[in-house]
Length: 378
Image (cartoon, rainbow, N blue to C red; front, top):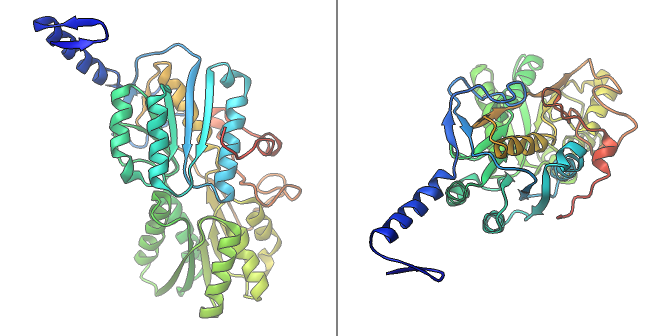
């Protein structure tokens, strides 16, 4: 005999109930359905082979959580602020009963525990910037069985059982490498300032850079350092690399690019071609020192991709058709076309990522709207 609370079930009745409970758990996950997505412009599928999901529709308001890991750099701080700014917009706030934000640092186990806690607490959807995608496999299964919509962005998950929202991170590395190839006809020594070791965005960008430069047939000497996408850290490792290597012919950096250029200035290293991210301070430098040799290609995606991830989560909870993998466009600007008020903002902080909007998703933010939010857990 199996006992559920005060109700005793036996024989066929108990077997039927257990079968129903088992089936219900798995029925809670999404159905795979034909496309297109409910919002084809915003929810662009990664490829023509991308699956489309449809969850059972729920009635708002929803409980949605953001489980972030690492936060000690400008991009992550702005991402948290952008998430809060988006959740505060009237049309979004009307659909939210609760929006919870937790940042757990570089402790992978702590981030996994946070996601598990949100599942156990009955949240409808969880948005994650995964510290270690491999470690998420058990959590992905739990979320699916619980009917929780799990959306990963930036550092995506290696699965087809959760939604991924991202730019082509490897393609970003390809973009930077092509810029260096274009401006260095004879190859040369390159400083590669990477992000945070072990994260998928860092690995994909790194692979894109190396594969592209290898295909040119030129001789490249690439020196790698890890700047953690952080200005002070990137500035220090760049200065250290210059002290040892003396000279670089070109630079590519995944973040902390303002700090990298500051290191060039501090060490009196000549300005060189640079493929980098979209920090406002970096683009200010690119405009200011172009004539001295700082020929820049600035590309990436602003922290507003978290807003797209939340938008996708809400659409999924409402029973709309969404792709399993959503591809976001890159925001780019190149020398000599850096224009104040368009590609960078001379009156705004250096610590601000430009291109932090997705017009195809009707997602746009002012600097003031974002900077008015805090980075703390909510």
